[in-house]
Length: 518
Ligand SMILES: *Cc1c(COP(=O)(O)O)cnc(C)c1O
Image (cartoon, rainbow, N blue to C red):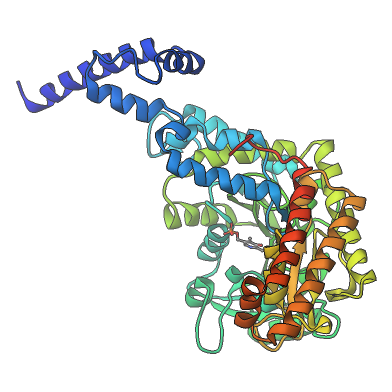
């Protein structure tokens, strides 16, 4: 008997034993649970091959039984999410259906390639799901399949952007994006005087455009001027921290004037765009990338939309076609990625379905109303807001006139269970010591907070920031000394803890989607 036959024989025996065990132990999960309870967690099948039983417990048991040590930490994170006020503008609480896709059997499947052109067999249902995710992505943004194609395979927003650059821009081709300290994203090409930080600036030549330091608004005239000199291959219209709608038409003019491709990176605002509550980049852009886990409230993943069909007609009357489809698809795979994350792709499909529902539009409207209320509330208490207001889901607060830094503001809020992040504000001298904080409303709005609840949140933020000023009086300006006072000064510690308890009690009065304990 050759070794293959021997292996096959043992595989067959093992499979039969496993089938037998699973028939006995887990006709259904409930039955498995019941059996366990009855037998005090000792499997009735103990008289079978012990190794097989052990692995069965590992394979079919619940995490809380198989790895309580890890599960305890996950439970603590859930508690943290439920007890705090989540105001990081890029975060959200995704839905149970999305979580269910993410923990489904789809996770097991390899499916390199595009639907109906896979490198592996067994993909008939995976194909169905990916095609559904593509169709629903187009529907969510009211796009026709003749005009737009979509790739739903990028693992996240950063790989999606890098795939576009890889496919469309030659190595060392030129890219212009909003500078990181001005509200752009790392992947738009960030570099400093001494170091190329983002791979976008290593493999491509990036030139930033900026906001006007007085108004905080994008300086489109300056962008136009720089673009004329730099002649970029690609201009990116996209933000991670900018509270105003973008002037896509102006971007288009500047791109056209220089023969550049216009890409929108709508990662932060893709939920607002799907709901139609802010202007859409699809009207004038050539390529649109997004994450699906921010305002869109789907899984942690990325998507690339690209134009298809006739791009222009030349002087001879010949049609010039868009050539993005193959370039982008091939950059995603095999260029940069391997097997698609099918569980995430299914979750995109269901998130995009949710994005077409009236409740979703209502949610996004409320996200903006809450951000505007937050902005008004902070202004009425004397805080300065970059650009003076917001059209979207976020607010950039300038802490300079309150004598605080972004780091100290972020720290005190964190100690009081309000999550946000420090951020540069227009005119900041140093990107390492930013003067502002970025606050967003998508996550709180998912938990059901309305305008009057936001008033209460404003009050909490104000109390915390006043406490930070009090601490600064004791500590002086250094962050290390500030942190020291928060842990060593008994009076301050009591004040922080009292405020934190109030905030946590308040936060826990709102539910959040997901599983009960994890
Ligand atoms: C968040 C973000 C990304 C990157 O997304 P990741 O999923 O974190 O890689 C890209 N562009 C913009 C504008 C973003 O805000």
